[in-house]
Image 1 (tube, rainbow over the protein chains, first blue to last red):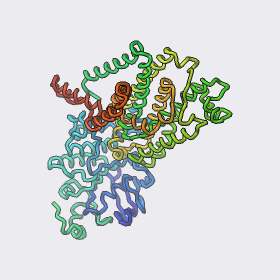
Image 2: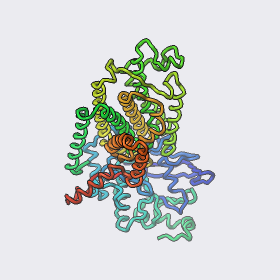
Image 3: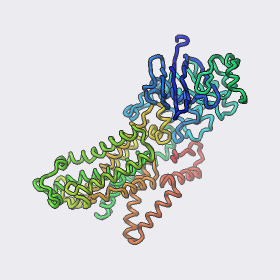
Length: 251
Length: 363
C-alpha cells in the first residue's frame, strides 16, 4: 500500500438548493487508510457532502473524483456502490422484516443484476465473511432474529456490517454513535478502528470526545466551505475553529 | 433459512399437497356446474400469485391488473372465436359491424399455440414497457398506482370503442371448440379444469422458488427500504419492472384459463372494479404469503357465489362487510390470523425456545 494516496477528491463543488448554497466551491481531499472526521456546526454542509459523494444529491458545479480517475458525477447511486464507496445513513436503515442474516446476505459484494440475483447462491467464502461480520458486531446470537427487533445500537452495527460486506475502499458514516450508550460508543469506536485497517473511513460526527479519540485527521466545515484540516490538536488550536464554535457548548 | 421449526415446514408441505390432491379429485365429487365455478376461482387464484409478488413482496400496488387478465382472455377468446367461425368466415360481430376482411391483428390468433404465447407475452411486454418508463424515472408509490388505474381506463375505452375489432361492450362469446374438442362437453371441461389446477400448482411453486432465493429478500428490501437497497448496489427499477412484467404475464395466463371455463370475455371483466377486487383478494388472504392470496381468491369468489345464491338481495352487503372486517381487524389477512393462532398453539404446547419464532411477520 502506497502512503497517502488520494482516495477521493472534490474539485470546486457547489451544491445549491433553490438559491441556498449548502456547499460552495469546496475543494477537499481524503487520503487512504485514515479515519477521517468531518465536523462543523449544523448546516455546515457535512451530510450534503456525503450525499454528493454517494450520488444522492447532484452538484451544481464541480466534480468529485474517486481513485483519481473515476468521476462520480457521471455514475448513478447504485453504480457508485459498485466501484467501492459505501454509505451508512444517519438513522439506522436496515430491512426490518428480514432477519439479521438475510440483511447481511443481500449486502454481500457480488453481481447485483437481476439474473445474478435470481440465481445467487452463497459461497463458502461469503459464508465465512458473514460469520466474521456477525462476530465483529456481536450479533451472532441474533442471527435469525428479525432485524426490526434489534436495539438501536445493534441496528447501527448491523448496518455497518452491511456496508463492510460490500468490501468498499471508502466507507462513509453519518453520525454512527448518535443515540448510543457509553458502552455502545466504545464498541462502535473499536469497530471503526478495525475497519480502517484496510480501508478509508470518512465520518460525520458531532461528539468531540469521540472525534478526539478516534480521528487520524479532522476536517472542519463551515457554511459550505472548508475551514481547516489537520490533526485534532491542530484543529482545536485553530482560532477560526474556536470562533465558529463560539457560544456552542460542546461536551 | 436455517432452523425454522422442521415440524411446521413438514406440516405446511403436507397441507399444500393435501390441498392439491383435493383439487385434483374434485371432479369426482363436484357437479359439472360446481366444477366449472371452482375452475374459475382457480384461474383467479393464479392471477393473485402474480399480484402478490408485485404488491405483497415488492410493495408496488397495481390497480390495473384487470387489463392484463383481460388481454390474455381476449387472446384466447380470439382464437376460440375464429375456430367457432370456421376458417373461411369472419367472426359474427365483425360482419355486423361491416368489417369485410379479417383484421391483421386477428391473423396470428388463428394459430392456437401462437394465441397462447401472445396471451402471455402481450401483457408481459406492455407491463415491461410501462415499468421501464415509470420505475426508471422513479415514479413510485401512489403515482404508479394512479397510472396503473389510468391504463385500465385507456384500454377498456379502446376495447369498447373498437366494436369491429373487439366486439365492443359485448366482448367475445359463443365459442364452440378448442383444438377441435367441444367446449360444451364435460370431458373437455374436466380436462381444462385439471390443466387450470396444474397451472396453479406450477405457478405457485415457481413463484415460491423465486421468493425463497435471494430475489425474495431483495424484493422485500425494495418494499421496506428502496433507497437503502439502492445504496447496497441494486437498481430497484430493474427488479420492479421484472416483477411487474412477470405478474402481468401470469395475469394473461389466468385470463386464458378463465375464458375457457366461463365462455365469455367482455370489457367489464377487465375494468376498474375487477382490478380492485383482485387486490382485495390479496389483502384478504394476507399479502406477502403467496398461499394467502390463493386462498383469498378462492374463498371470496366462493362466498360471492354462495351469498348471491342464498341472499340475492343483500349479498353485496355481506361482501362489503367481509372486506371491512378484514381491513379493520386483520391487517395481515387470513394468513396473519392463522399465524397468530399457530403462535399461540405452539406457545401452549411446545416450550422449546427456538420454536417461539414461528414465521416472519410482514406488516
